[in-house]
Length: 86
Figure 1 (cartoon, rainbow, N blue to C red):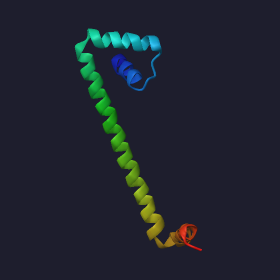
Figure 2 (figure 1 turned 90 degrees about the vertical axis):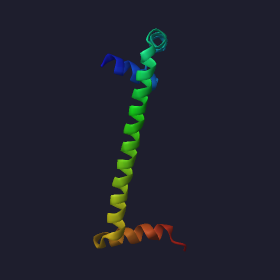
Figure 3 (figure 1 turned 60 degrees about the vertical axis):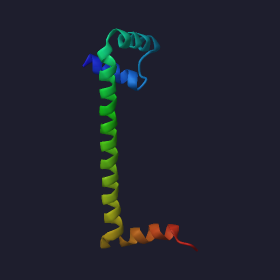
Figure 4 (figure 1 turned 180 degrees about the horizontal axis):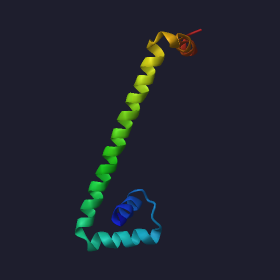
């Protein structure tokens, strides 16, 4: 777990400058570390993409409810009035 935190601190620029230098030295001393950093970065990217997709789906669900269900008609009319030409 320490290595995961070290890599995260490096990826997100959370480490102190001196810790960054130590991490750079570790990258030189441990050839496999660069590979593990790459995979951890990919994992963060996948999690971020999944979160965005999930959030977009949730927003679309709310949109469909607000603009298609009869009980939200007054809300829908209010929003459309904001964007109508006067």
